[in-house]
Structure formats: structure tokens, C-alpha cells
Length: 457
Image (cartoon, rainbow, N blue to C red; front, side, top):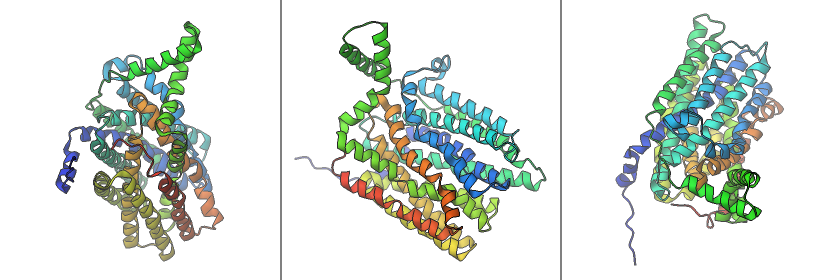
């Protein structure tokens, strides 16, 4: 009989000192930063140019591309970027290409005006979203491939560090964006947001420089496994010629990852997993989409939002993400997801208190701290959960599929968040209560499948 000794707390924490975690931190920051551009920055830019809450909410539909990036994820698993792949590697070549596209879009935004050409502004935002969603596919694949397939504890720690990195890119990027916009506005520049986007372009350049220090493992079996899948499909077609090879390649690229996922989990469990992933963070998305508008409407300035929601929120997120990672390592990712779901529902109610009490810096700080604590726990558990489900033969595609389904719930449904606030006649308190209730269906799904999941822990 084997006897397993439970890790001490210090032993659990020691996994964070693996040098691979620093690389994962940077990858997370690269992934999180673009959300500053098409999230809070774009929302405030439109708000301060006089556009309605409903318009701002529907403009958030550009996030929906994250829900569909799995459609082109197979291409990223198979296609190599000319010249860049040879110089910096398959994954990094894709990331640099997308970062360059985002930089070009920021330059274009610096010449645009939403009041005179809203379509152009949103179209550029859509391009940023597509580039960011494409970048995320390969960032997540590179992050997962930093860790061995059966290093369950390192994978959970890596998920925590990736979340810390994501929120670092998002929160600190938001601090830079909001403070820069405030500075140029007070300096008398009418186009202060356009100037701010040029400043944010410098951050993109810095991310690309940092990326060169991230090691890219060169797997020896991924391409071979993919070729074997192509060969199996070609054999089933009954002949071997150029046409059947093309059909086999396309089928293996697009259908292979899906077949692998359903084969591993079984049809019913796979469907249940997808249902849970779709529903888990809808309430958080509704709150997040309208939060900066809510802060502005009850009287907080851009500097206040930068301090409490971005700066203070970042510190809280870092601390509780690391603690969430330790909780997931010691208690298991399933228990961590139940806890984080309950926390998300509970902390949303604090924003109802803030709405009903009026402007209060103390209550604002408390609400932000607890909301970020819940979001940190939820995100690290969620990222670890889907990271443990993927087949390394199709890392990018399967992770993108699962992440996209989660994003689909958050982005497509949350696009109506502004319309919901308007329908409630601006009753923010009731709005936040509704967002708290939204987490319950996903927890029911998780309870139904918790004993049947196959995770590499």
C-alpha cells in the first residue's frame, strides 16, 4: 500500500519559484493588455464623447470574436509564419505578428473620432479584438507547453501565474491608459484619448521585446501525431492522391481536435463540460462590462477609477490569485471552482450596496477588493480546469475551443448589459443582484459532472 504525505504550505508555495513561472507571467501580461484597449479605454472614450450606455454596451459585441477564435485555432496549430517561425519559433512568430497588427490599429485610432465616424472606430476595435483573440490562442498554447503534460501541480501554479500576468497586463495597462488620458485632458488636449493610444503603443513594443526571452519548447511528437491523424483519414478515404491528401489534412486540422476531446471524455460528459464552461462567468461579464460606466455615473473620476479599480485591484488580484492557486493545488480544482462561484455571486451584491449608498470611497474600495478576490479565485480555477482537459497534440485548438465557449457566454450575452441597465431605468442595485443570480446554473452543471471528469491532476 502506498502512503501519500500531504504537502506543507511552504512546499505548495515553492512551485511558484520555478523559473518557468516568470515566462508564464509575461505571457499572461501580453494576453491581458489588449483588453484595456477594447474594454475600459474604448468604453470611456465613447462615454466622454457623448454616446449612450446602450451604444457602449452593444459596441462591446466586438469581444464576441473571442468566442469564435477556435474556428481558426487549427490553422495556428498547423500553419507557420514565413521567416518569423524560423527566427523566433512557431508560437512566438504568431504572437509577434498579432502584436504588430494591434500596434498599427492604435496608430489608426489616434486619427479617428467616434462622434464623426463611429463605424471606423468600432471597425478598428474589431480588428484589435480579432488580433488579440488570435494572439490568445497561441499565448495559451505556449503557456501550457511550458509545463509537462502530467505536472498537475505545476499546471495549476502556472494557471495562477498566467492569471496574475493577465490581470497585470489588464490592470496596470488600465492605470497607464486612464492616468495618461487624465493628464492630457487636464493639459488642454481635446484629442487626449487619441494621444493616449500612441502611449499605449509603446507598451505593445515593450511586450514584443520581452517575448524574445520566453523559451519555446520544440515538441517532437505533435507534428507526428497530426500526420498520423491525417494518414488515418486518408486511409479511410480509400485512395492516396493530391485531392485525398488535401481533404485528409483539412479534416484532421479542423475535426481532429474535436474528435479527440469527445473521445477522451465521452459524449454526455463532454457536452456537460461545454455547458458549464459557457455559463460559469456570465454574471462577472455583465458586471465587468458596465462597471466603469457605473463608477463614472456615481461620481468617480478617471483617477479614482485608476487608483481603486486598477491599481488597488491589481494588488488584490495578484495576492488572491496566488492564494487561489495554492487552494486549487491543495484542495483540487473542482472545490476551488465551487468556492469561487459562490464568492462571485456574493461579492456582486457589494456593488448593489454601493449603488444604493451613493459615492463612497470606502465602500468602493471594499467592493473592488472583494470583487477582484472572487474574480482571481474564479479565473485561476477556470484556467487550470480547462488546461488539464487538453490533448497536447492539439493544445492550441482544444484550449481555444474551451476558452471560446466560456467567452461566448460572457461576450454575446453581456453585450445586452447596457440595455438591461436602461430597461431597469438606471437601477444599478437591481442590476448587480441579477448578475449575482447568474452564476447559479453553472454550479448546478458542475455538481452534476464533478465525479466523472478526467483531469490530469
